[in-house]
Length: 72
Image (cartoon, rainbow, N blue to C red; front, side, top):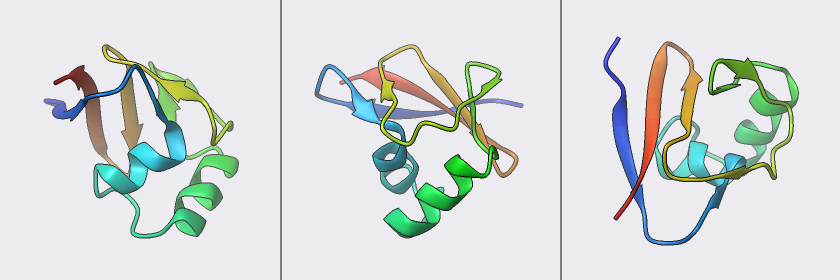
């Protein structure tokens, strides 16, 4: 599966914010629930920390979609 790219201008973005920014979740509450429920993979490992700092080069997988973070 090909990863979609999401560009950020900062050094990092928090995982819950990335899910909203990338359009994978519609609300912060939804993002929090799916992260804490173990439904999100960060670089092929389950990540349950919603405040985890995601940096360019990291890959997120959720709901059958893959997002790669790149620096703008």
